[in-house]
Image (cartoon, rainbow, N blue to C red; front, side):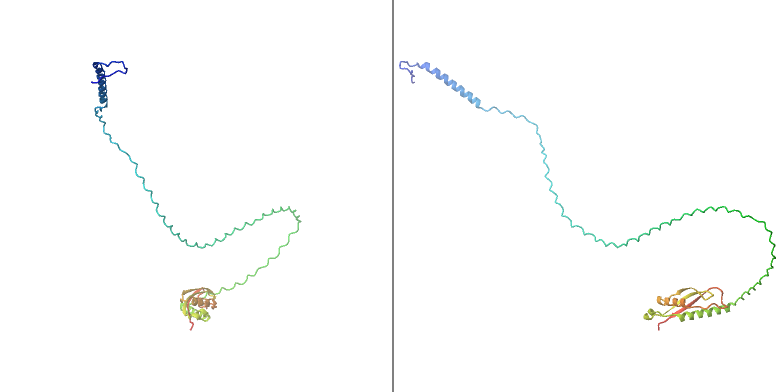
Length: 251
């Protein structure tokens, strides 16, 4: 075992018993420090974690944005309706204004007649009465005797003879119009003639048409142009109706 010496030249070496105690003390301190460090560096015992209640979390997610609607294609414009042309309506005729009332002249006031002086009556002798002339009565014309009644047979014969003369006169006055000649028309028109006892035509009408208006018009014109004779003594004294048939031919 080595001995320690002092720093100075005249020091004596320490005895061996005194030197071992400080070394042991230092070694004990070092061991204690090492133990403390080891204890401090050891991990603590794990503490069981406290149990928390299980919580379910619900997360509300925002819905995805809706797709933008695609605008529909514009439809072609409908064809414009063709409006028919408006009929030309003539303007209404102007309403004539009522004539202005003619002012009625006020009657002039009648002049008040001046009172005339009363005539002075002179007393004259009364005139003598004139002799009354005796009036001679005029002769009364004798009343014509009433016509004797005509037998029916005689009157009927007279009517037939008169109707025949009327038919012959109208047929003789018939003139064929140019249109009838061009179209080569022909036909028979039946007419009713109303004739007075003097022979005057009172009226004419078509009983049955020929089917051709030009022929009917020609027949009516012939009747109106004819002069009829007066009735005979054996005929009635009132208007009669005579039916005749007028035939028109272009051949």
